[in-house]
Image 1 (cartoon, helix red, strand yellow):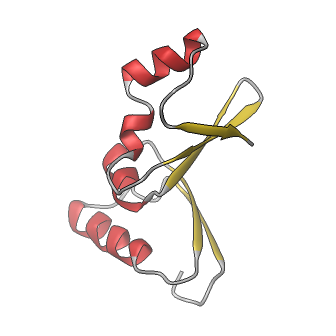
Image 2 (image 1 turned 180 degrees about the vertical axis):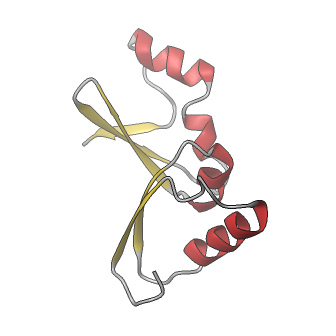
Image 3 (image 1 turned 135 degrees about the vertical axis):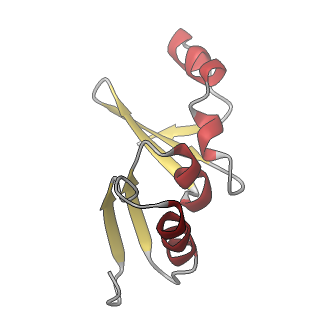
Length: 98
């Protein structure tokens, strides 16, 4: 992880970390220059700190959600947004199908 990388793929990176190490990982990922990270995680707090966008896969479709600031990622999938998305009207965070 400490080698120079162009892309990092992280699958549930916080599963076995304590709070101190999660904070270190968040800081490390947010300060990497010119690196794209793809993260699979159910830790919404972690995602809020490290994500600038989400690609959601459901029903064999990908949908790209952009967030304007740190901390907005969990808002993408809050109950109201998910209900609006499922009912067919546009989610305010959705930008395009990928």
